[in-house]
Length: 75
Image 1: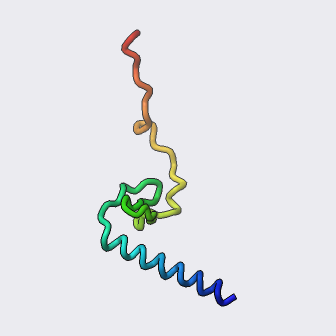
Image 2 (image 1 turned 120 degrees about the vertical axis):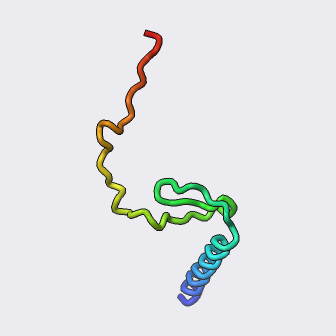
Image 3 (image 1 turned 45 degrees about the vertical axis):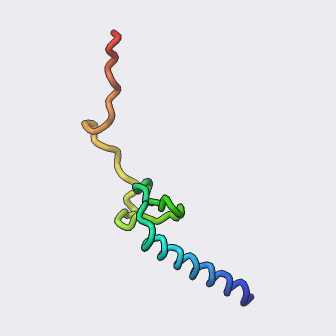
C-alpha cells in the first residue's frame, strides 16, 4: 500500500516540476482552443485560466451575426 501512495506522490511532484519547467523555459504556446492551450515544445496541455467552465452553454448568436449562405453569381 505504501508503494502505491509513494508512486502517486512522486508522479504528482514530477508533473508539477515539469509544468514549472515548461512555464519558465518554453515560450512557444499555441492559441487557446476549446478552453485549453498547449506547449508546442513538450505538448503539455493547460487550461485557459480566464475562461469560465459554466459559460460553455451559451445562447446561439443573434440573427444578424449568423453566417449567411453566399449568393450564387452563376445565375
